[in-house]
Image 1 (spheres, helix red, strand yellow):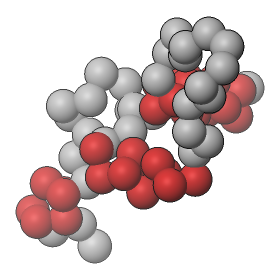
Image 2 (cartoon, rainbow, N blue to C red):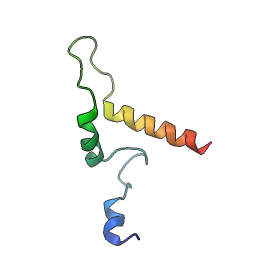
Image 3 (cartoon, rainbow, N blue to C red):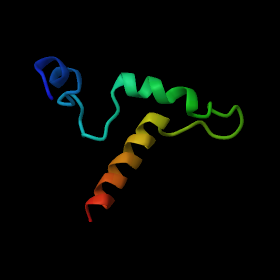
Length: 64
C-alpha cells in the first residue's frame, strides 16, 4: 500500500525520464561496472548514461 512516505521515497518526478537512475540506484550498480581503461580512448559517455539508455530501450521494446 502506498503511503505519503513511500510515495515520496520512490517518486521519480525530478528525473528527466522514468528509466533514469537515481543517485542511490547508481551507487548500488557502481561496484559491478568495469573501471575505465588506462589505454585507448577515454570514454565518451559515462556508464550511468549507457545503462539508462539500455533501460529506456528495453522498456520501449517490451511495450511492443
